[in-house]
Image (cartoon, rainbow, N blue to C red; front, side, top):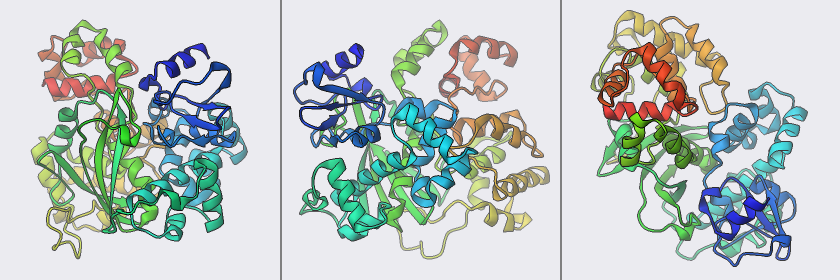
Length: 481
């Protein structure tokens, strides 16, 4: 624990989200970078999650907002059941279906799942979800004009009493004390999404902007706007890089924030909306660890030094990304955009929303109902799209909680889905950090530009030194091409 205390003493923001510490003399828990006076080492206890700190009777610090740090890069990149469970809890699965739904999604018993999470995170799935509900409620109180009773149920609490008790336990105050007099009431929820610096915003937003689908998403004047299909209804989000210090939101030195504006049709969807935006922009990554590993290869050292913090653009919907992957087989990015736009007709009632999306990407059921003429592609690719839609409709999941190896096998079993398509889906829909598309033309061009072997087999052998971050090398090879 000596290294933890050194991180606390130096207020090292690189450890935010990796551990939390409670101060026994005050009963408050903080993030490592908290600007308050450093407590004595004998008064400090360390916790693997904010939920564990709350479970042990500590209240969240009002100064450093320890519940608003970037997520741990461990749970973001790992593929084991604990990491998958954390990602699903972050998406609100426990709030919507309880622990039984979470256990069913993961294929484990509730008892075993509770044991796994308690051993590694110091809290079970209910405690983790409860702390998350309190954070969601806090956001709604400070960012919207909703009444407190509306907020309680929107955040996932079963009763007003449970809401008040949890809030006092987690934050040490009544919910009403956080209400601001100037809270907006126009239905827009403004947020700041924290991340660990550096973040190469040009690479991240440029990648998304080059792949927009007319009506579904857009990139204008540095702002990326898109529609979302959430558990309780449609929504739109606008994202753009924040400027200046982020201390008001507790993001501290060595970190930054992305500005976000959410327009939700149902406030119960705030938690999954935030989780999906964070995954889309890869905000829980540890760029220092990734860049250090890639820069150890002399062939990548210069580009890593020139562009630190390049992230892995992911997705807000796994089925959408699977369709994008199939449509993108052997055609240009511009050609794929044109074909995809024809699959997304404007939704009713969207004509009077200037600057906002007019379509939501179709569900598997909706895509299966489209006539053949809606698919501007060869018949074989149309059959592949319908096979993917049928598989997802029948239970194949392409999200943060999926078993990556099993999902790849299931995809490869579908007609017309080869290694390139399955790996592209793993890269962007599942968020696998260790994928390299060695046969991809853009990959080979980028490798040649950087003086790397462009033969797929030779490149694969060379790329072994990039594990477990080959996906991040993939983005850099695309940029080099």
